[in-house]
Image (tube, rainbow, N blue to C red):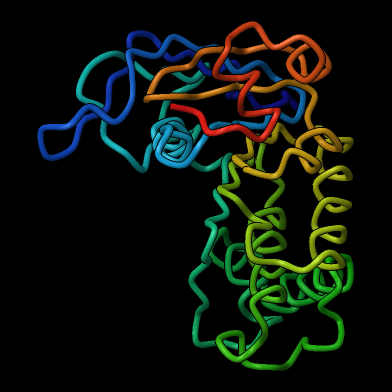
Length: 240
């Protein structure tokens, strides 16, 4: 059997995103390679979410190109996105996690077994048959991560997935993300949490004013930031 083509690298060239007459992002030139866990950092309003949405295809661009290594329709099937406030379906937890598999034609019995395995893996085994909209915020975020990973995407985008979680839930999600990276899933995650970035990142994209100011290995970014804005951000100062 011939292996399916990889969708990465992803190439952004001269990308600009505007809304209501305001430029939100760009111009951006960026290459996303096939491996690693990239953390996108920057102050509020820097353009982190817009950058993730542009790469995933949720935000229409005003100029430039976003090019995957395969046809765009194929690339869309091999990626997933976890929002900061995920939408919960009016289904039980196990059915919510299984839903993407069923959409892809997996039989319900197999899909539910895989969903149960994923629920246990992310710490939701105790709420398998609870209604998804009724579980806690941390549990909803774990469900969203499991729902995104169950189809084994080649790349996973996450927008501040732990912003509203307690320490235990954050640790559990970080563990799942590390395991996913080890399994070969490319991860691009926005976060304000410097500690989380230090724990997880292989490299960092630093965004400010809608522009990418730094793209560098994580150790280099935290030890010797190249720009005054990045240095101020790491030190906890206000970035203007």
